[in-house]
Image (tube, rainbow, N blue to C red; front, side, top):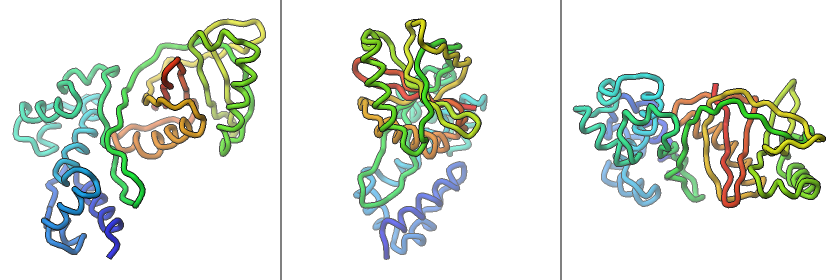
Length: 260
């Protein structure tokens, strides 16, 4: 018996039945043990009970349901709550705000990713927000890059950019990855206009936004990959592979993933 494989099968069953009644006897059959043993193993490895994980996954998806215009009472019943009051209490415990306020796209929410069990460390709490940003006008340098090895090229671009425009460290700076005509381009950009910098117009868009304290290119690319491949699907969002945006300040980086 491979514990991690069996746990992943349990997770798959849960994901397929989040809007239905979860049958704990079926979970025990998948795992090949009684449910008490499954609960102990799950809690030991995941750091939470199966019940808590199911609750957090449902409340993660509920954010998208609310923003997509579903009625709160329908969402509450969909995920097994007997009243909107009990749903709201559970929602506020996880997200720190009541469901109706989440209609404001700028409210930050707490995402419970789909767990994938292995011997590597797990990820539980990931904070994100969805924001609609007006047209953004930036100025920068552009270079075609290999999409499979962006970090190495980008780091060299930023070194040159900072040497030529030292004041960029004192203003908001942006990294832009653009996919166009089967090619990948990266821009080192800032808000300050300079004559020899290319003007960049980013249209009004809706973005899925994550924060990171790391300024390393490989860490930022990892966040972008996980946001597209895991986090967006986990909360029912669809992304477009046109533009990805990094917004830097003195202490952290905000990673913007464009939504359809």
